[in-house]
Length: 422
Image (cartoon, rainbow, N blue to C red; front, side):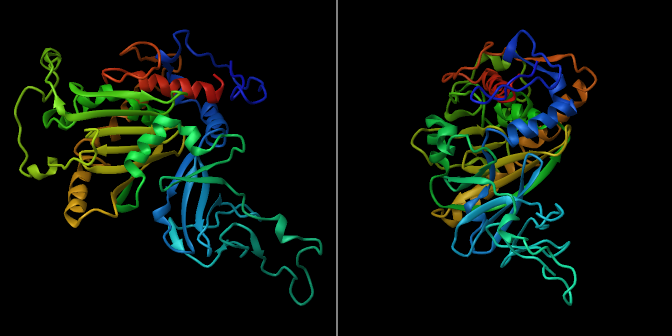
């Protein structure tokens, strides 16, 4: 039965009949991907609960008056930079009738005005004026005790970390760096703690529950099997030196590999892993050339932050992915490809070229756009079933010498169960 959303919160009454399998985090009930009531509860307990959600990058709001629209779960959000350079976030919902205030993905404005009845807000979300507040020719208008200070856009608590703007509706959740934990925060600093440059963006809609993509990002086991390009061209394989680090609450993770330390394993031939046993060549071999950026030798990493973001580094391609639920069986996935201000033009071009590895039509990640839909379609008629996740064991613990494991996926479900109260 569903109980409290978090140990620090007051106990909640059960709201639906749901029991996790006795095997614990080594199973994920299929019902989680199709049940509209569970999906609705996630909006409250995860996205509007004790979590930090990636909103945008600081560099995406370079000038006073810039805004971007995004979502926290399904809640529409505006992020702005005011005329003093301060960043604000607020729900994109007019305090009058509830209409969206900002309709564009991004813009530069002096203030925010709802097109419906022209209620006007400052860049901090404070109501500044109401059309016809005093009526017309002395008739109508707002009551004499109407107070603009009591009608603003709902604020969202925000924090900036390594150039990323995070938002939360929770007043109790710890700060972002503490939420990440020391190992996760340090690895983000490795990749992002310097001035960033946006090289490109794109998005796609995938027809599956958002948690299937959250699983996919943590599943290092599938990468060498599904993504044949990785294996064929020795970009990321399980027989490279690498491992997985989980955060204290298990819901964030880092998976890493060192390309230079590949020792080809017999298991690739024994298991008849496709594309591992023949030679191929690229007409454009420059795609796979890279320079060593960090002294730790890591050439591939996937880092997740619960509930819905990822930082990837492959060769020299750096990107942020974040994804938003758009219904129980639909997810919107966004990609921001990055470089550093210090990059030379040649380095920028190499990063842009390598960005073809990932993204909606990437040489590597193309398959992820459909594989999670296969799971959605395969499980939707069996809400009583559950997935089996025992590769590498049955618990969620860091594994610093292997990625042939589903430990990070189990870690996601451990964190999910905690915040949902399952």
